[in-house]
Image (cartoon, one colour):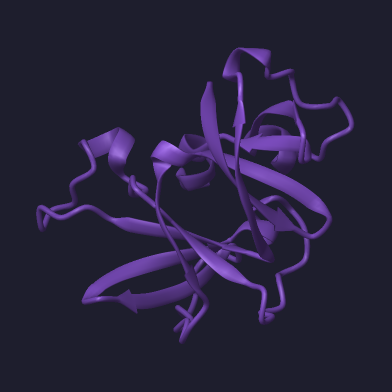
Length: 153
């Protein structure tokens, strides 16, 4: 059995393997980055470390998320460059990334081997960033492909 941290973006329930989540925090002081890609919401200072925040809604090809009281940031354990450079940048520290989401759900257990392919009616962006769908007690859980989500382009 695997455990998944769940969260909502719009009406859809998404999940990430709990082992890939460093922490979940409330949204605070996101500093925008001029001329950055549309899905880059900005930067935050998290206990002295700079964290790049991605707007998950925009990354999936939808409108930007309005920040609400229920909004949170899911801080991921692996940075954007983890696959290319073993998680280290030139300064020798890990690049931290976070996902802006509408609301946080529960941690759910599900058998990863029971994941089904994503539905055929997805947009190109959604198809690229989703790895599968699991049926859980909480409903249909859409699994994200974190490596692809954090890659540039």
